[in-house]
Amino acid sequence: MTGQHTTARVTAGFGRHYLVEDTHGHVRIATRRGKRSDIIVGDQVRLTVDSSAQAAIEEVLPRVSVLMRAEGMREKTLAANIDQIAVVFAARPAFNPHFVWRALLATHEAGIEAVAVLNKNDLPDIAPARAFLAQLAALGHRTFAVSAKAAADEARATLLQVLRDRSTLLVGQSGMGKSTLLNLLIPDAGARTQEISTRLNLGRQTTSSSRWFRLPGGGALVDSPGFQSFGLHHLDPPALVAAMPDLARAAGTCRFLDCRHLDEPDCAVRAALARREIDPERYAFYRQVMAESHG
Image (tube, one colour):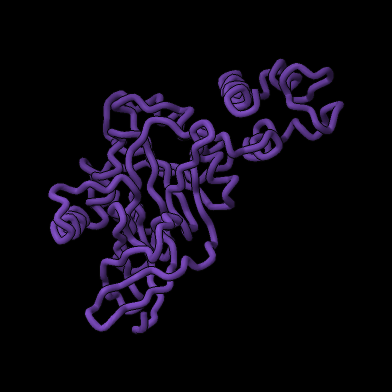
């Protein structure tokens, strides 16, 4: 097949069809040549466009970064070529601290920067969520608190400072207000997604993957589906400890270099736990992840 060759970014996936945007901002629908399904949102791809404007994806270009979660032996990639993750949580409905910790661990393993965003900061029962945000800050994470509904202008200004000129993936459990934040920053996001669904005769929006949007003023925001769990089976024990600074500070002085910080003698991590230098809930979380991934 002969035709024009160009490169583009994958901004959405709809079954076998992909929405791609080239460097000039031209958006088109493309299909992957052959039967391979190795494409994820954020990928840079090489296209062939024929004389009838039909586009075929010939090649996926090397990725700078990729974020994934793993449930059992099944890995789920969320986005490629991103340089920042924003983990969103809120006081209502009740958030799961372990979800936030897991997302931050996966981000650390992927070599991607992270920020934690407390949404719905106006709720009356916000104190536990604020305390959790303070704990994340004490662990070295960048943190922000906003209210996308009650203080929309302030939230927009705060978030644009954080997101400008970055390619940021939004992750969070269902109900944390992630969609509200997306619509605050990109008001026509829903309309643009529905337009593509209509063109593809999909009826209502049916994509179950992430979606890439350009941000006004520079950068991009990638919306991911809400989900309730964040598996870490792809992290080995040293990577897990390295991503937990409260454990890593003590881990270097264990008796054994390959200490797993579970039942080994002269474990500096468990000694720090006994001295209350490590939060018992954080250590219990560590043991849980180890049991899931490494027996």
